[in-house]
Image 1 (cartoon, rainbow, N blue to C red):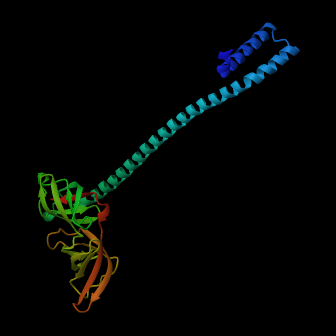
Image 2 (image 1 turned 135 degrees about the vertical axis):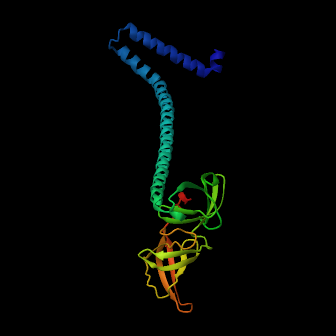
Image 3 (image 1 turned 90 degrees about the vertical axis):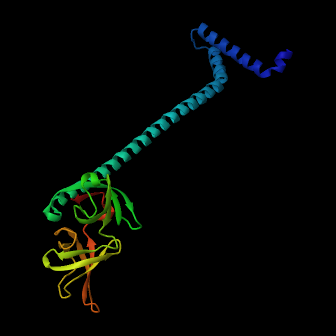
Amino acid sequence: MRWIREHKLVSFLTLLIVLAAGFIIFAVATGGEEDPAAGISGTVFGKISQPFASAGKKISGGVSGIFSYKKIKAENDALRKENEQLKQQVAGLTIDSDERSQIKALKKALKYKGKGDTTELVSADIISTDGTNWMNIFTINIGTERGVKSGCVVVGGSGLVGTVKNAGRKWSKVVALTDQNVSLSFAVKNNKRIIGIINSSDGSLLKGFTLDSEATVTEGDKLVTSGLGSYPSGIPIGSITRVRYDSNEQLQNVTVRPAVDFKALRKVSVLL
């Protein structure tokens, strides 16, 4: 008896288990017949077993919830990974599209001719930029091993890019048309008798003047290389965006937007 008093909870649970077992044995023995005793026993057993059943349901629900959470987390992780893969594929498609556009532009450069009417040229990728202004000086991935040397003219599909400043094996430095020290002769595409000089740049627009102060040029006129100096003739330079007459110097000053989009430039061709 002293043990029972000291272990009341254990004794109570043991008693419940014994009673439950007795009710089960009784139910089996009576074959499930409906009688008052069976009804009472069923009610008592139901009352006794109800807390245990509720606890079991809660435990089962908790375990099920844990497994459901793990399943949902795994699905979310899989979706996140798939989303990242799709983003990379989209980025890859964008890069491929840009490269196709550059290659298409390079095909246009095949019509340009170097000094002596040569059409020999080699294509190259821009691998780095130098200087404080974007794309004023940049490096390409071909050089002397392909016949590139200082002074070679560099073009893009849209027009004139610049000239090679110096070259080594598998590299060349190119000075772009937008460099502030630029100097070249131009002609108006629709009237080759009108010529002038591009002599400066602000990093994005070109500045120059016509040699004939009475020559008629207007905004929108397209300029090409005149063939005078180090550049072959006929390569597009850009379009006039502003015309201003300087009465002091009696010059017709022009501002020109380059034909080449230097910020988007990734591939070029070198005229040999």
